[in-house]
Length: 177
Image (tube, rainbow, N blue to C red; front, side, top):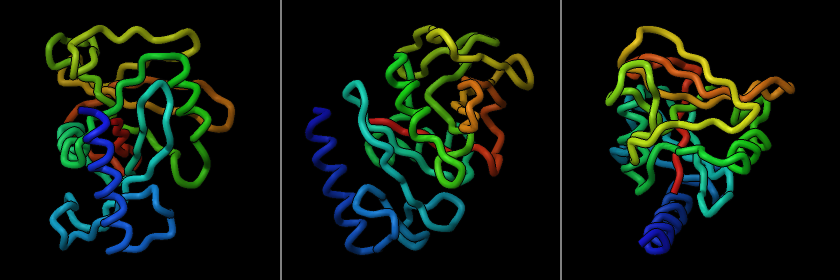
């Protein structure tokens, strides 16, 4: 099933790239607001970060809350990213830079089932962080959702929780297939 979804996704990417050229090459997914794919207007441009552990990661810097980010990923046959291995954390860390992939990103973590305890939303399993990954909780003790962030200047990697409803210019969307 994943292979079929990936084939369909690649076909969508190729079709979108041919209809809406971008400077980001064939690994981007680009729709105009008139296509109905944009949330809140503007250009939607999903960028492929690459593959690790059998997953492909894509990001988008458009301002959305957690629920809309989840719906956005699903619109393209993906889910919000679930980061469970040291290899996945190292891969994402290697992709951070000062110009494009440099925000906080909503991931598939929420506390909607338990107060103040994030879990992976798809599996309802506890988040167990590898050594060297920092956990920070911000805001109220309920309705929190997870973000991933790396201080690309050599600082630590974080899983941080924020109110699921916030829309901030510094929180993008991180999806996976």
